[in-house]
Image 1 (cartoon, rainbow, N blue to C red):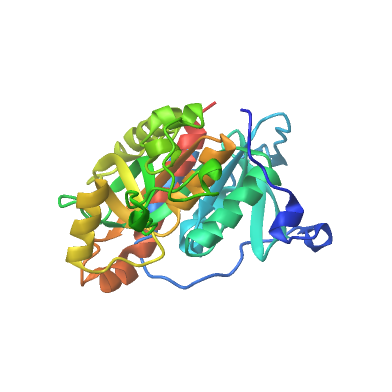
Image 2 (image 1 turned 90 degrees about the vertical axis):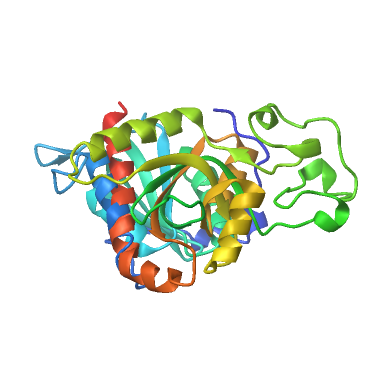
Length: 329
């Protein structure tokens, strides 16, 4: 797919000589508890989960050089370790103090990376995946806090749209979460009537500004199909929800804040990276989807619940991703 609005490497301040490549194993990261494991289990089912290394045939590496690259991002090690373990022919490259793991998953060329927590980290990571590794699709996997009542720990949320809930130019008459597009940056007070890109017709883009950025419909369908495969093997499967994923540089931990985000954006869950990845993909015309397993209920018990369930929820999300790629030929 055609990509637009790309920057040069020099704009990122990443000199080419700083990029190094070597064989390696998984990187070390933050230490979390158990919610990530459910997400990783689902991803394992997606990839097949039976073989210790997906992408190997009769003990030999599989080479699919003509296949497009799929970028897979998680913020924490719990959200990507299971995926890295599934890679066949794995090699790693260090760029901007992030380790990018290249390999084969299912029948696909993939690059898996732990970006770190927060929207800035996700933005940089997504740009590198698209510009350096030529990712044709991007999947963000991990855990999130529930905003809508009825979501339970372990449930799965697939993004229909993403929104940056902490982006606020309301003093200029804009809606919260509304991000000005390039032509508007010269005067953030001016509201444009013309829509700047055909993508805007697929989401909520007020006056040429991105607010609710749409995920790719084909990736949403693939995620739902993968959920059907994964849940069919579970005795007590989690529920699947498709809706808005809200991102902000804040861990939501009060019921009042959770209710406000659900009311203002119609968001089902809150996390800290997905909307940044979604916006970069939107600007680059690269399809994306965010998959999140619920690790907590975004209330005053959230820090405790997160610590207890992060690993389990992340494993479930990983199983979904693996199954998605395994099922997509």
